[in-house]
Image (cartoon, rainbow, N blue to C red):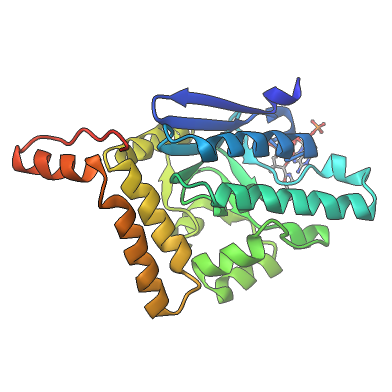
Amino acid sequence: MTDRELVLLERDGPVAWLTLNRPEARNALSLPTLLRLRVLLAELRRADDVWVVALTGAGDKAFCAGADLKERRGLSEDQVRQFVQQIRGTMDDLAALPQPTVAVMNGHAFGGGCEMALACDLRVLDRGAMIGLTETSLAIIPGAGGCVRLPRLIGSAKAKELILMARRLEAREAEQLGLVNFLAPPGGARSLGQEIVSALLRNGPLALRAAKAAIDGSLDLPVASALEHEFACYQRILPTEDRLEALAAFGEKRPARFRGR
Ligand code: COA
């Protein structure tokens, strides 16, 4: 397999599907896989014609089994340090994409696989799959944002339980905790992911970007500054054609045709 095949990028109109493509290794994240993913994420960041990004895994066993533990055995302490910086940077690039992102988890998501999902905006999980930040069972800690993003998502008490106990959660419990937004029937993650993507596409693409920026940029601000930030994001969409199209479509009782302008 060439490095380009480690992660696939497929376009479906305004949607970009990224697929981790090492099913024989349960889509584990090797260094070459991360480097390829970062190249593709950099392309997507600049792609104004991509309105939604979906991320999934090849095969039906795992979305992603986390860091490549076979590769890890051959690494020195310094190389592990560099790997952790690389995987953290990759998840930061994913979280910073301007488009809404959907983790379409077709199977288990452990360690870095779970962290990858946490760096997305919405999460779909196959009902038969398990998910967790299991690093402490390997005598390490989540180092790609898991210790930071999980408590912000589900609260520090539950996050501590999951991380300190290295719990592998059943899909249903993950959904009840708010770690996962949607459960798919067995084998149906991609098709449910497609439905969620379609629902997103019915909304104004520039508004989706602005709403994401308004939420992500305000979480760590005091309320007054957060409200200012929300207003700044609103201002970005005021001059758009799509805003006027939505008003015209409402008046004419027809669906809006958004163009991302
Ligand atoms: N890194 C490297 N290889 C991995 C891997 C990982 N994180 N996870 C699985 N693999 C490999 C296995 O070693 C095996 O390779 P082999 O065929 O050469 O023996 C292959 O993928 C299939 O794994 P297997 O465990 O037989 O598949 P499964 O479908 O029964 O179970 C998992 C899948 C994901 C539940 C299981 O592989 C697992 O628990 N992996 C470790 C997950 C983990 O702890 N991640 C945290 C990393 S910090």
